Length: 321
Image 1 (cartoon, one colour):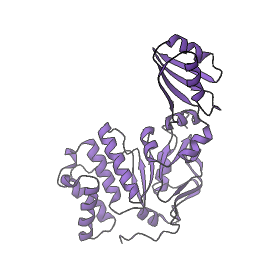
Image 2 (cartoon, rainbow, N blue to C red; image 1 turned 30 degrees about the vertical axis):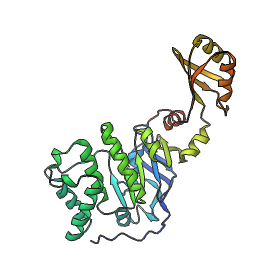
Image 3 (cartoon, rainbow, N blue to C red; image 1 turned 135 degrees about the vertical axis):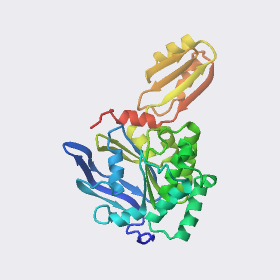
Image 4 (cartoon, rainbow, N blue to C red; image 1 turned 60 degrees about the horizontal axis):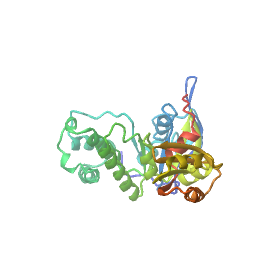
């Protein structure tokens, strides 16, 4: 076995699927999946539980064979060239088994050896990935003594020992506390800066929005959207939501808002309002003018940007296969 990576057949396209499908008996877990992920992308993979995300990641990592269709990783077909694909991919499952009778360094050495890395090379690489994941001082610590967040980072370090081009991460922040999630997010950003391509499944949409330049939304095994975050917002033509706080005359403000044709809904909390404008409204400034002309002084008037959670809720229906 050799540790060298294969030459990239398609250096610019990390993932390309064509009608990729997977059935389990009568259950169609993934249906005619067509997605493209370019080299260097951080692509968020979003969908309800049971949507087909894990099945897709397993097919891309060669752990499951497609029922039909095809998938390529940097030009290599996952069925025809599984050995080459495995050299280029690092897969981190949502549930993983850590070898709990090992220390952290031993664990990484085991997997590096499985990839055919020589002893001297393993020592160097293990030191590098431990430093990258901020676990250098945990090399001799038993895995059972590591916190949940540290175990997640160790699992990610394991994914990196063979220096993969594409990282397939299935819920890497699952079960972590806020600090550990921030640390994982910072690590993924650093990996992106190292020109790694990342395809990441997560339910924490706010964090995906901060990291990703592309998203794939899937439901019942079918892609509902695949493209840039900006294109998603444009496609949905999100409504404008404005947060308003008035200094006084809150009752009068509520009356004015309810009488304004462009206002679709108004939620009030004492002197604060959350106002949703109709979908084709492009500018909320007129609303501030209308309130001021009605003699209502404003403490704040803040149009909100579209959020990934809003887009997800509007494009999906919560169905599962």
